[in-house]
Structures are given as structure tokens and as C-alpha cells.
Length: 196
Image 1 (cartoon, helix red, strand yellow):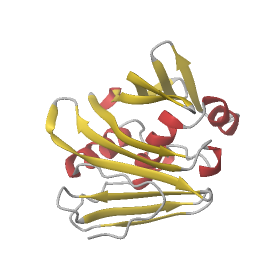
Image 2: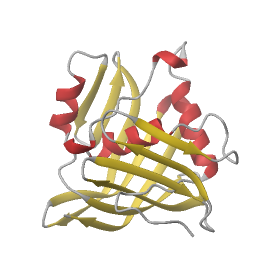
Image 3: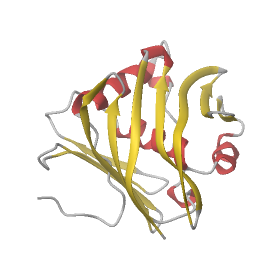
Image 4: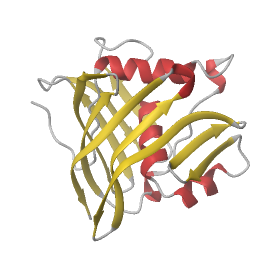
């Protein structure tokens, strides 16, 4: 049993975590030069928790429950197996990212990549591009979602499948994240959202 923090947790399939990170690392000749940008948790307009199911599009059997949170200017991420075993824990306060990764996970699993993908999908576009101004990164709004590019090269293609409206406005209930160079897609479906 794990202790639930008020900050959102993310639970991703073991193989999915590895494939996401390895897919992103194929984008550049020197992987150490390309780090997906992180946004301050304070740029997210709400506090609360989102519980989601994350799965590979071509392998729905690899899906697991996922959850992430932002509270008091801190974003927290926890990855668990289906039986509740903790595989990954990360905490980001806008300056320092700390993470603990289980030896059961492949060494290429990187919490930064997972946090960045969440932020590119759900943080306000205007605040992201304000932070990215002057860098080789750009997040573009397109008719079918968002695209993150690095020196004009597509890194992530984020496409909503369904949008849920609440008192705070629209939220992408189900979305696809495509990693073109890895020829991979994941689907994220929101099961529960508690925003304040």
C-alpha cells in the first residue's frame, strides 16, 4: 500500500514508460542535448488530481491506471504496477526535479519525459510558449490539438479524441500522444478529475 499524496500521481505501464523514453531519445544525435522542457507547476491554472488510464494504441493490454497532481506549486508523479507496487516517484517544484526509480524499470525510464508530456498536453498554451520563447522549442496549437517541435522537427503530436466540459472549461478527456520518430502512439483516458 502506498501513501497517497495530495499531488497528482502518474501510473504508467512498464513497457510504455520504456518505449516513451527510448522513442524521444532517438530524436537527436546526442541524447544529452535534447531534454524535453519542463514548465513550473504554478503555471497550471488549477490544483487537484487527475486519474487516468494510459495504454499503447497498438496494445491495449498494456494499459495501467494513471494519476498526476499539482498542489502548492509542486507536481508529483508516482508510477505503480497493477498490484500497487511503486515503480517510480518524482517531485518537481519548478526548480528541482527529484525522482526514485525501481530497479525493476529499464534504465532509460526518465520521469522528466513523462512530466513534460503531461505538461505539454494540459498546461495553458500561452504560458508554455512564453516560457519557451527564445529556445529551439515551440508548442503549436493546430486544429486537431498541439504539436511540440524542436528546431522545426516534430517531437510530440498531441490530439484530443474527446473533450469534457466542467465548471473550469474544457479538458481533454481522451487524447493521443504520437511520437513520430518512434512510430508510437499512446492513448490517455481520464477516469476522474478533481480540480479546485
